[in-house]
Image (tube, rainbow, N blue to C red):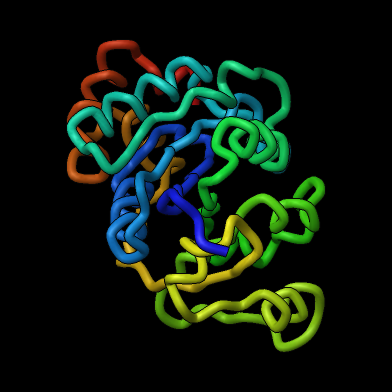
Length: 218
């Protein structure tokens, strides 16, 4: 089934703060997969990890400042506006109603993919989006189990599949390995160290201006 629109990428996360690891992944997948755009989407309240240090509004503002001069990336505020616990399926349902003819691609790291069966309504997610799994050298995939069965049923090798079908495929793509940790960035800032070259200057300026990761908040 051929669609009239290019596939759209979705990169979700806490982005506490957004850094070059996130942004480089989004840009490389945008280019490698010929995506229309990548929506970088801060969640309001994560359900599988502890709550972020920065407020939802601060995390959104940092993403907005990070992508301001990059037209291929877009800061999507829909999960911040929706409030409450953030479930991917709800976001996909919202986007599908808004863009019925646009293939949607969830961009996830290999660790997130290995935990995919723990996601809320995970079986429904592939009815509304493709999964694009960004991997680095030496990653390990299970030979048996739910994830292995899922790959056997859904794995695709051709990029054209994600543009010609609205959802349902799993595609693996290598990306540059940037071992940058938001947790380490927060600790460095709290200790008075300079995190420059780990995140955009605009994001660091915002953090300094608002005292986002002061020692009392870490």
